[in-house]
Image 1 (cartoon, rainbow, N blue to C red):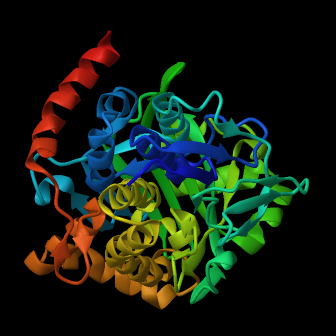
Image 2: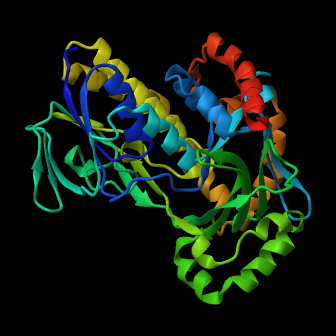
Length: 418
């Protein structure tokens, strides 16, 4: 396809990855971001093999491995020591693993990979309206930008622009959210594991190794505490001391890590929503990332899905004869993958975040045995790695990519020792 003039609304992972892919394909790309000074902020997340493969194709895997933390196992238990979840990537393929990464690290890596970030990134531009037929954008100051051949809306789960495409089939916030922060890893022994602790479904605590980031090599853990969104204000009003006492009693082995929490302002508040769109595109406008398919983070797939979206859109534009045909191909490809994860996420969220004590008891009894059954284990591992496609299909991982993972780990270890 000929060179297009493309606007991207939002400079999160989806917008950044799209900017890199589309610029490399020769398109004229500019990005509008509402934040005055976009930068490396946020807690951590888990890159799955599906997302790692995209970064490998972008030539960014070495940088990711240099800053991230390899994760081989996801383990969760109760305060009394009853295992609830125990999943290992090696159960699917011995060479596979996940990578815990700080959001700031991925931001910096993608930002450096986009040569237009210095001149084509328009910060402090809050886009409030889009004309899908003319390809025009209007910001909160009343200024109009464009016209553009294509507008990519990647403004997140709370997107105000998705309504320009179609009315969502589902669009509702989850009642439960979380408190998040980054803490120094110190001598935490579970350096290659996501560790979680559960008290029924009312309380969930997690520690994920996420490595360092450019400019700050300190190895850190991403900490989260599940909390009903209506309790955020009361949590802060109660003060830190009683909550810290509860934290220590539920997970005494992590006391040294929790010493890094010094004040309530250190913890960010996360809210989630479930959004299923009838259409992902209309006219010259297309949705991407959480703007297209926001979901609860229970499956840890948000960033991975955003990376896959960006790659798929670039590929569709590359291979199609028209923009309309490209957007249809992109929607068809990504919806065939995403819908299953939205379904699983909707089903799993109340199992881990709710007031349903009976459901939590069933989870504690059945979840681990289900994961040990041949059929159940395979299904769970495909969902974990991001490779489940539909009911029976799989998203392929290239052999060349899988073979690269071993040398990438060794190179990262040498880099960190140096």
